[in-house]
Amino acid sequence: MADPDKPTREQAEAAVRTLLSWAGDDPTREGLLDTPKRVAKAYADWFSGYAMDPDEYLARTFEEVAGYDELIVLRDIRFESHCEHHMAPIIGRAHVGYLPDGKVVGISKLARVVDAYARRLQVQEKMTAQIADCIQRVLNPRGVGVVIEATHGCMTTRGVHKRGVSMITSKMLGGFRDDARTRSEFLQFIGSEPRR
Ligand SMILES: Nc1nc2c(ncn2[C@@H]2O[C@H](COP(=O)(O)OP(=O)(O)OP(=O)(O)O)[C@@H](O)[C@H]2O)c(=O)[nH]1
Ligand SMILES: [Zn+2]
Image (cartoon, rainbow, N blue to C red):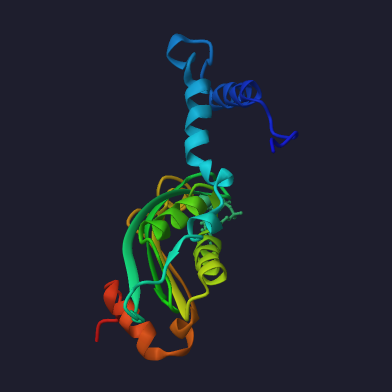
């Protein structure tokens, strides 16, 4: 159902013209005439996750897996998101693992879940927890592990201006939290085992 409080595209474009003026430029000059339209279109892409239901991606499961009950890991899932404090890009990769309990999901669906949460305004800790909680809630496996490594545009291009810094977050549930061997195997699979 359409949200009656959602601004129209025209209102969104007018807001972009205001920001262009506030930045110090002239929104009526030729090069900027179509910019509000482009920005609204870009927003529709960057924030398309609000219209996605991540639970739905995990609805179809496969049970004919010959009793496979070991770790399943999808690593290096590239994503783009935006921080909710500055609306600056968060660019990174997510690693997602789970211990199946009789059923598995199509592996692309784990990447779809990551995207559904990434394409919203985010805090990295929240996104990490949302992905893990979604998989635990819908698939009900014996455990879930999510690790995210990302760089935050608000730290690299403004503010403290620290390039090369990345933030690492993790959320471990079930066997990933309680069993040191499962956690260690997961970290080894994704290449984050602490070096000794
Ligand atoms: N924990 C966490 N912090 C984030 C994330 N994205 C951005 N931030 C931080 O959110 C904080 C917002 O702090 P504020 O002091 O309200 O904003 P600010 O004045 O723009 O802060 P500076 O970035 O230090 O200039 C900053 O420290 C950002 O680095 C995130 O995903 N997780
Ligand atoms: Zn930020």
